[in-house]
Image 1: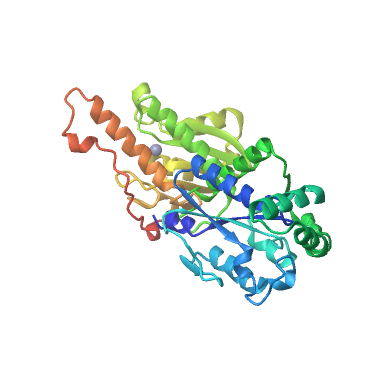
Image 2: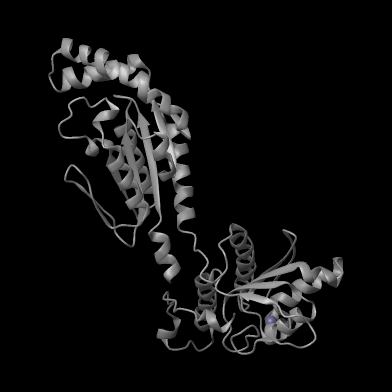
Length: 389
Ligand SMILES: [Zn+2]
């Protein structure tokens, strides 16, 4: 399952920018908690821009106090899948190879144009000047027992101008601007939902074959899987397919050999019959088939006679496969044109469907087979793609 491993090295980096005392850290922590509740397999990390402050600098509001180059290199290292990334302040980011890589990063200057390409999403927490001043007083005077006059002076002399001159303008680069009020539950919900979508996308199995990655392949193969699920629900060997002509699904089928008591009622044949009721057979030369399992000898031959353009399939069919596993009907140089096949699309899912079927059938058999055969295995061995191309 190299494809699954590869997906774990991809990263989600969420930038949370905003002015001093806007509430960035609070938002970071809140989002992290929510994310880990939504997706327990996720371990999120927090990266503070303050880790990149030059040690000799004392003005934490000024852009010149931060080593932006080192910060950018860190973002690149995160994206590059590095497992341990040392930070200038002596801290370290440590990623687990089998966990999703999610980083919340917060700071004043995160939305500088040169940093933007590294982020998955860009948030800006907005609080007006009065709110930020009030917070700075509460935190520094009441919390840290600093002198009020000095805190006010620092705010007016340093924090306020830095915000207005350099931080506020980067707000333009945000995807989402969050108001920082006491109650921002709906905004948090919105951002959490967005994060969940990002995680789902990150964990989508990618192609294992030589096919170029294309979200449309996923879309159509998922429809084929839905058909296969119908087979499974009907106690049929779970194979499903869709035929796509110029971006439109023109036929769908799932295996129905048991219920019809006919060994030829394969998913492909059912869909082909559906198509021929509405379209001339010439459509097939511009039609692509997505099928969860490699077409059998019979279907592979039928597809060849119909001049199918291409076939994408999930797992191979070691007993009856007609597209490379047993015979290569698709490559046969006889009268009908050859067609290309692309194996391995959502293969682990296709294999698991078949296993679920056999486990279910064994369990329902009048004399159940030995117990060990009823266990649903999850390991998926590599596929030798060279057989098919
Ligand atoms: Zn077949």
